Amino acid sequence: MVASKFDQRMMAAAIRYSYRNLGRTGTNPSVVTLLVQHDDGVPVIVGRGITTIGGRPHAETAAILEAGERAQGATAYVTLEPCAHHGSTPPCAEALVRAGITRIVCATTDPDTRVSGRGFQILREAGIEVETDVLAAKAQYAMAGYLMQRMAGRPHVTLKMALSKDARIGVRNAGQVMITGPESNAMVHVMRATSDLILIGIGTALEDDPSLTCRLPGLENRSPTRLVLDRHLQLPLDSALVRSARDIPLIIATTQLPDNEAYRRLAAAGCVMMACEEDDTGIALPELLDDLANRGFSAMLVEGGAAVACSFINAGLVDRIALFQGRSQLGENGIDAPLNPNQMPKGFALQSTRTYGKDLCREYERTC
Image 1 (tube, rainbow, N blue to C red):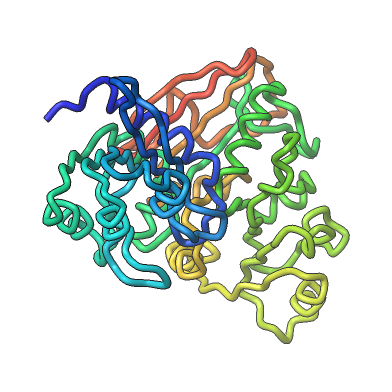
Image 2 (cartoon, helix red, strand yellow):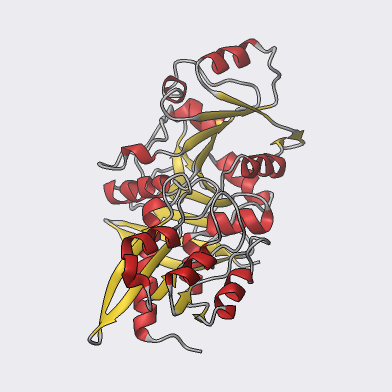
């Protein structure tokens, strides 16, 4: 069945609203529910809910509470299949039944084995009309972190890279070099705000001394957990990352043991020390991502370093690539980018091209 234009419009609104709490709902996805009534043929949103910060309550519960008696006979637009299992609260599918909802329009099925298909079954057995897969691709894009964690047991990985017109990512021994303009930089901060975790390598940490925070006005409290791959614990105690570790979580992924002096000092400074396995390329990334998923991280932004980018690509652990390209040229002393629009890893396809100021952002998705 092809969804009506109105159903698509309502679902698009719900998906857009779900971005408000991306990266803030713990192990639960940021789901939105809109309850719509028709007053004399005029559609009215009578209830609106989004997964609360921390993950509870769920969107369906919040929307029903806001709608009150007006939930009776309403159509519910939900971005993810309502849960069907008893956890700390009863199933949302049953809450929708009790509220008297008569029709459900849903974007995508929940891959969680406790839910998948069962939520829809509860609704249909109660006589509720259920329509699924409405703007499914857009909803799956928004909640890619949750879906990847549930289906593959690891976080979804977005590799972000800024490169110059001549495909360079920096200048040797020059520290941070501005490659893209303020509009692109603002968009990167939005990406940080909607991620659970941001990762760089120790080389970038030493060269640039970044803080990796979200500094957009009004979104300062949306900074994700920071993670540095630091096998030999080279990160200085006076670095911007360590100095802010008590305010914004900082994970140090290392192969060193707790009896190491640098280990003890970093831990005393407020860093979260994470023991990692080692392989012939350094820290074993598949095992690292497994551990991060077990800690509740689902959406990872990889920002730093050509070596780190290559490691993730070679390990087959990159799901999305956001390539920001400025108009400046860095010349012969520039550091070559490990990828560019004319040289992309196998298995990635261009999905969108956007303009931020004078810069271009090309976004690629893994297709296999």
